[in-house]
Length: 376
Image (tube, rainbow, N blue to C red; front, side, top):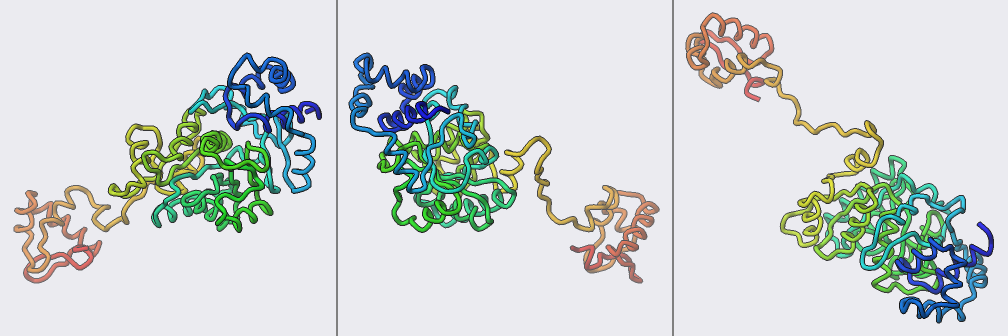
């Protein structure tokens, strides 16, 4: 990456909105330098470029990069060793809310490297989460993190915060992707978390330093969360939750989309339930399910849960018939047991002796009855 192209990409980041479909599409097709030439000389060709063209005279990308570097913020662009190649899939993912395409670069704060996120998992959901949702998100993130996969979320209240905390509890890397500049703390209550991520992990944004968290920027941010990761888990999302927007991007990018069920009466889970009902997500009940779905074929397979095996489970069908016919208290002779079981007396005698050797029945002077083990 030449210094001129890096400066051109930084300039576009400073003058165009994150995820601006037209600007990013032209910058990718023409090249950053040529796109800036169009902005300077032919901004009137597209009304949507007027604002970006007006900003050109007010920005100093070299100074912004210098000041960012002094604060421990780097600008990662395509061609850099650290660039996460999976973001390039956004070029063919279309648009949602007029947002899409590959970012010209990402502003990163913290030592965590973006090229190590190829197998990461996103855990997203409601900002107004319940205790149940926080517990589920934290447990999923901890299990995924303990398996060596990074956890990506948005640093917001609720499920995002629980996901970051879950990953940290497992000693796993976690990355917050923001809708504002990486030098800003939003929400402000999460300053301790962001300070920790900046020191030990990573904070990422498409928006340049100093940018405010506008609503439309969250929609642009969501595509990055989906694209950076191998799969997205939605925990507690209401019908209009932004987490569903992230799930839509994951689906467009052919990533694994997963959802955790909540109580049927919970409004916080209505969006997840709708996603599951229409087949837009695979149902997962914990981190082990997530690892199976994002892993390679045959990797991290989950054993089907089964109840503990009971003594009767190992019996043949005819032996079960006999056991069911043996009384629990008052003993009964073999003929009585055979009549209830619908089998011959000779066969029942043979089966009863085998059951006695297993400790399931006992013979008394007046007949047969179940033992305590047989009753269980």
